[in-house]
Image (cartoon, rainbow, N blue to C red; front, side):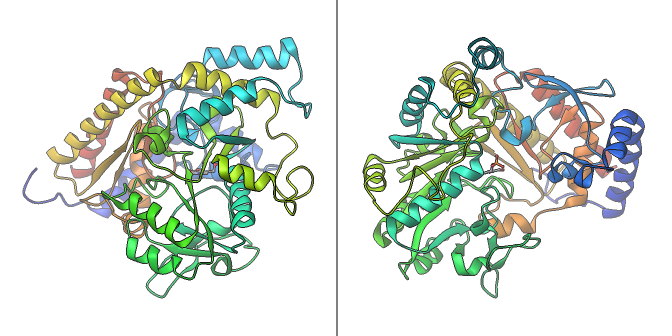
Length: 456
Ligand SMILES: Cc1ncc(COP(=O)(O)O)c(C=O)c1O
């Protein structure tokens, strides 16, 4: 490490962003045209408004994708470390999932019949083997897995509130848009049309703060603590030694249930952080990657909780009680989940993905050190992320304070213009089974060049 950290000049960053934006526009005329034309009828010009997060003023339009590669309609190929913000952690369109989907949809037929198929019990048994909870139910998104798990937790405990961690993200779950601040909790900036002030439904504490958690649980009104075992949506914030044991002990002592949302932390290994770190939550939720990119989510309960909820005569789980979706557990999603878990996101695949992420982290770390950049990188299994502060943040609040949208845009555009995609939200990179050492080294070279340009 060099003695003094390098200084980054914001005016140079602004100039570099302009340079990269101009280059981006020049390289992608068809994407730019498609975006301009789409504005007439697509809200915000995109199929989903968060696609506006991509840097450069307009998103790339995808032509095709396979493994860890995406090709845009201007004919450029990219090494993809975004992987659909985890939805494509299994890689794009893995051959065995293609075959399972074709078999279900075309050969056998019947994506949505409201009837079970035999794949579902296989998937549930596999999720139980990997994550611990024994009784599973399916959704189409991780958001819904969290929503329905929260409802079940309220029903089971008879308590009104939930508790989340400041700057968490669990999908568009109304209760979770709350942050902690010096003047107490507040609705997260930009919260769109909240049904009620989230302070009425939710308690919030900083990650890694056991004293705060103990204080908030003391009122005994929290049905469930909803957490990622490591925060991944405000950079990566890892738990300090003993912290997760403390969370488990405090939740048990106060009679609150505990949900591990493994949607992103699944990157830690075949059974997510829950298995990698030997955790014992009451409920696990997951989504995004488990069906190889086909919409699917799941939540699993311990046998004791499953028994209680099924025998609760006041809980309508089969009709209009508020837990369920017509297409949830559909035969197509379930077939895709089976193929993905059985043949793609296997123990062996995770071993390779994590080795690639070790290489990615070491490469970025070396660039940071040799240029004395005041940045750090944190790894969680197959996922890694750099952040613009010298040491890894301990809390969501600390990590939020290290955000720098201008630097983000520069580094993202620099990478895109040279054939590498990062997740548009902060600087997250994820390895798929198809990611190679050469892909990782290409990123390291581009990141080094971007850093050198920044400091020139
Ligand atoms: C931890 C976590 N849980 C849940 C979700 C929601 O996933 P989806 O948008 O697919 O419902 C996300 C999305 O980023 C997430 O990061």
